Amino acid sequence: MNYFSTNNPNHKVALKEAVIKGLAPDQGLYMPETIPVLPAEFFTRLSSLSFREMGYEIVGALFSEDLTPSQIHELVDHTLIFDAPLVQVEDGLFSLELFHGPTLAFKDFGARFCSKLMSMLQDKRELKVLVATSGDTGSAVANGFYGVDGVEVIILYPSGKVSDLQEKQFTTLGGNVRALEVAGVFDDCQQMVKKAFLDPDLNSRMLLTSANSINIARWIPQCLYYFYAWSRLPLSDKKAVFAVPSGNFGNLAAGILAERMGLPIAGFVAATNINKVVPDYLNGAPFAAKPSLQTISNSMDVGNPSNFYRLLALFDNDESLLKEKVKGYFYTNEQTREAMRAVKRDSGYIMDPHGAIAYLGLKDFMQTEPGEYQGVFLETAHPGKFRNVVEETLDLELPLPERLQAFLMREKKAEKMANDYQAFKNYLLRS
Image 1 (tube, one colour):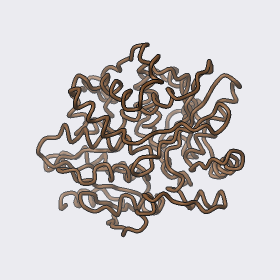
Image 2 (cartoon, one colour):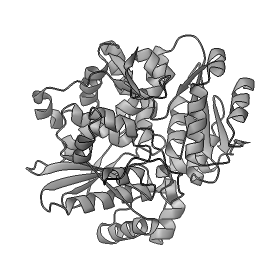
Image 3 (tube, one colour):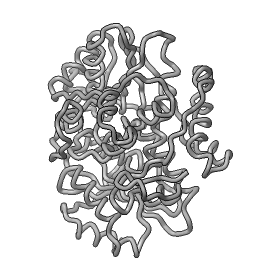
């Protein structure tokens, strides 16, 4: 399988280069040259398969040209060590809980897959993994790569704009994981990482790669839990729709990848906070990146989402097809809090602020054609990761899982850095 750049379909590379380089030289994101469509019989038996069993077949369809069957099994077994339960919240409406992994966020799936695949593909040179994070990516990648031989992880995050728990999960590990606290916003961190990948001087001196969702090894495995969720929905003649809380849009693009592979998902909801460049685009405005704004759903505080171009590529750059399949909604902090309160009051279910936005988008979409759909919203992080917001909003004391409590007891180790690429480059050269 070859992988092409979203900026130039004629630029194609093999799997190893796509994974190790992360970003194409023209700043495009890599996409599989062909998307395999799984046979109809696969879907008839999907509900009888375990998560790992379906993972073997899905990953096999995507990577069998480059990996042996034993490598595919090893990759899936390393990734799917935790469940992704589908929990009914209302009649015909379900939460897909993606927070049962090591760092209690959906990005554990991609980070574990990415770290294992990189270790399979890398040569003897030490890799420097550069990661920009608005919250959960940092913790998932740090823990996914912690202790991996031949890999050093450097995480850039915006000072004061991630939750305390998120920060502790990637600033307290030490070892081969280092954290840079940048005086800026997430988009600044992401831009510095992209500049590093495109710096010929830097790349001549060291082997750089990314574990953000711009890397296909982080992005592709996220399609697995869409298959799993769909297979666990009650049998029904109603159409399935998935609502995805969206920031950098890799998670939504992974759902569309699953649909392109044959999974019968009727529609997607792109739900955001007030950083709404994609909902605006889906509702008729030109796509225009904007400075990000801080909200209580901080992992989605992204004003220039990288994976937007993957969305287009999945539809062969046909904007009308994209807008037909994906509907965009956005919500304010207060609307988010109101949804969290209403769901807790009516069902007892506790949502984190990101899941609450997906819930709102799903409800609004389903009201456009009442009775036609059964819906799934993605709960991408444990509410405890946003404890202050959840406790303040719901007026309760939220007990933390032991894994999160343990991180709070550790000492933060992070180096402060100006929003300046040259300072970042100097840091890399002396590290």
